[in-house]
Image (cartoon, rainbow, N blue to C red):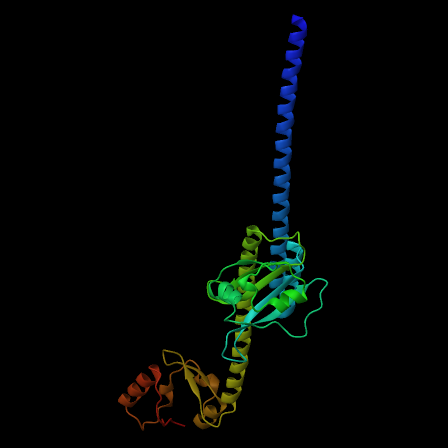
Length: 299
């Protein structure tokens, strides 16, 4: 009888030990699954960021690049759509946010583009206050005001929106939608989208800078052409009063070629009509950005 009791106790101890091992194994399995899930999310996020970086570095057409970015965002979130809206004040003095790019699965784009005014709650919260928001379409959410048609056209059930902003400015907002009842966006989704939107904002600013530089270069070419063909003589010096450029009319009137004048001071053209004080006053006014009258040069 004693041997039976000892055998039973031994079996019970083994059973308890096995149960503990099984529990530890289950915990380890859950931890491994959690780790694999986090790793999968990080890999997806890395793919998204690499797509953005590659597209922005090799960008040719601004809107096309943003559309590819929207498509990558939809793939990352397994969402149904993504829309980028940027502020546009060219048409009116009002602050309006218009869609410049988007990607929506299994939906037909509306013939009437969604234009959001600054007074709308979603714009106030996202673009003015700079917050990211999660909008449950099924609930009577105040942020749905003004975008009901957008959500209805795309059968949206849940959406997140964040500002497209950098340290310099807020350029617009990005909206990601889901039309699945079992797909709800979480705080992590908002955090990733905020980070991605900063990349988009930086790309927008770089694009604006390039557009400005191209415009400035075009205007500079026009100015150079005007100076070259001007009926008035033009001379340009550096801050030390050494000649850097003269236009053809100046060469014609002075009798000197540009090669002869560059690097010299205008004093080589003194006519003897003006005294030293005249030239001191002339240079003082020009150096301070003021205009001067006529000057007689030797020819």
